[in-house]
Amino acid sequence: MLRLALKMLFGDTAKFLMLVAGLVFATFLMAQQSAVFCGLMSWTTATLKNVPAPIWVVEARVEQVNETNPLLDTDVARVRSVDSVAWAAPIYSGILRVRLENGNFKIIQLIGIDATSFAGAPVRLKEGRIEDLRLPHAVIIDDLAVKRLASQRGGRVKVGDVFEINDQEARIVGIADTVQSFTGGPYVWTTYERALQYAPAQRKMLSAVIAAPRPGVSVAGCAEDIRRETKLAAFLNQGFQFGADQDFNTSTVWWYVRNTGIPFSFGITVAIGFIVGIAISCQTFYSFVLEHMKHLGALKAMGASTWTLCLMLLTQAFTVGLIGYGIGLFFTARFAFPALENEQPPFYMPEIVPPAVLGVILFICGISALLGIWRVARLEPAMVFRG
Amino acid sequence: MPETAPILAARLRNVNKSFGDGGSRLQVLKGVDLDVRCGDITMLVGPSGCGKTTLLSIIAGTLGCDEGSGEVTVFGQDLLGMSRGRTTKFRAQHIGFIFQSFNLIPTLSCVENVSVPLLIQGRPTRHAERRAREVLEQVGLGDRMKHRPGQLSGGQQQRVAIARALVHEPRLIICDEPTAALDAKNGTLVMDLFETVARSPDRAVLIVTHDNRIFPHANRIASMDDGQIVEMHDIDAGHPLPEHLRHGFHA
Image 1 (cartoon, rainbow over the protein chains, first blue to last red):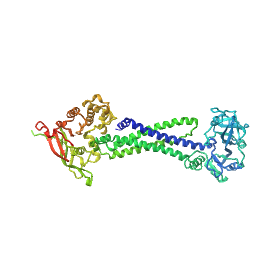
Image 2: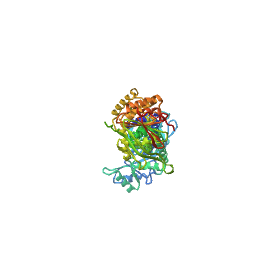
Image 3: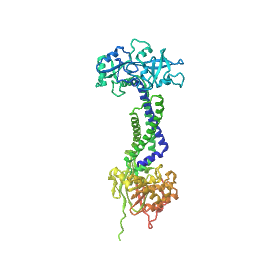
Image 4: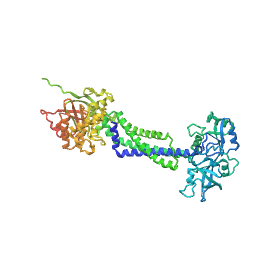
């Protein structure tokens, strides 16, 4: 009977295609917009991924990594003095303007790291050596800067090229593979001391202190020690997790969720996907059931139980749901590949998104089937004799 | 030698059926008594609105009677005492249906349409389709197995519907205006086929019809009016079709 149910579904080509199209649209909108939202949120914590360290120490009132209150230089020593800390290093992080060879200006995210330990250096270098950062005027740029800092459109800068940061020379000695920043500016690494020369002078210049615990001490325990002994905020850097309030990634993401319209905007789009999906699916499936009411009535008269008919409707609804979901996810992937390659627009699909979208699609299909089941359950088999 | 009493396919006694409540209550059947005998083609005839289809639905087990109504037994089983689920199973097992508008599923082939009653019984698809092909051969549609209903004429569609009603070898075949949508030629073809295929000593055929062209195919004709059976005619060599039935009924 289920095979016949599928034949009934596929045989009504117009309604079948309409149902699939509605669910493809809903799947694509929900999966793609969720992934773009997650991608955008991952950009907000790009500095934490590009400057890896188990612990970030910042001024006590700081909530997110892109908005830090400067610390005193002596705070590095205070953090180092905590017993459970293995090492601590200064970090400068700020948005500066660079002048290109052709006179154009671009924004960059300048990162100054400790020249001795190179703590906070990029995780992966595509070209050059990290030690070259000790050379005069040396900077390491990321792969976005390769295109962004080129003088001509479509051009690329390379190791050895020179540009100016705040009227001072910067020579490229390496290219790093990084996560793109939320501000859109490429990452540029230099030593902490040189970063202070590039950046406009302020009374306090230290953005943060990065630190690591001694062997045998947990990261959380070490951060707790730092908080207690320095009265500064010490965050873990382990990636976003629901409920992990002591993690800087989590704290940063929640700050953006609370203080910007980004989640609302994306939430509305995802909700539209859901509403359009449920509207098209319910309306089309219900009209499909109404159109087949006399056949379903005939089957009921011939001895098909209400349960069998319900199972047929559920099979039809969930089959169309799975097909729509598959095609929708295929389109999302088609969108994702160029986005990931060009790093525009942001795209990051956590593992939970596909099963969550599948759950929503099956929920939509379940609701659609329920409307039909409601009609079929009330269907009197005797109606087939009434013409 | 004494004559053996024919087996009763259906026995109805004092059957009442009303629709609506209070002031809008309408009594459609008023104390109907009826015997449907195996080996016979029994026709229920009468003007529109006289209660034929309601009576047919009650015998088919698709409609209940009024509370406290008399007795409805089909092949000795008390339909009124059965649960809904058992009635459904009983229908699937023992009753074949032929509807006025065929009610073939347009997206299925003839074989698939005919195999539906067996699939409802839970038979494997392969067995159901093999049996469906056999019956389609019997009704002369061996060359139309893969066709869909929309590709067939009205007469051919009704033959598919007959094949569907016979495929699971039911003992009672219930037909609702089987020739209403057919022209005279196709109507006669269908009734001839019906007589050949459907009539056997342990099988009964009950037809509701307005179509006086097919009355000569009946063994018994029950005339209804205003919710009651007003006349019962046994048609055979000794009792030809009464004159007033030759002219049919009008609403």
